[in-house]
Length: 134
Image 1 (cartoon, helix red, strand yellow):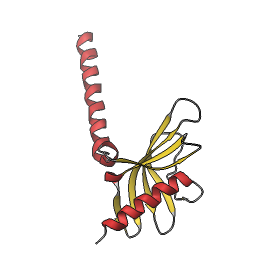
Image 2 (image 1 turned 90 degrees about the vertical axis):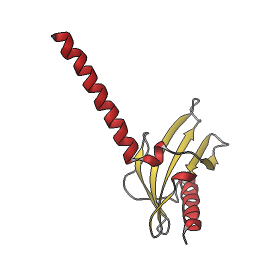
Image 3 (image 1 turned 120 degrees about the horizontal axis):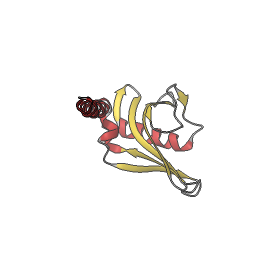
């Protein structure tokens, strides 16, 4: 009987993990379905790079867009990659990270101009969103 519950418990845990992953995919399809990564900026002689997924750029409202991006930092040797889903306020020149998978990120609105790589990502996303408007 103990073997039955141990096996059943693993099965239930596996189903729970699959459900959690499916929920994440449905909640944030822009990150999962990203297809067209465009390099938008680099610094430190190419050791730091910022990429934006062209297909993920979504207009949220007047002057506001959302985009998936990732940042690669090679300054410490092995590349460190952080992926973001970010909202940009194009007119207010600020951003907030909705989802991120690294140590850096901000859920609060922050000015974008002090960060040249993120500023390039915002400028790119806002320009694309503006050309998509009727």
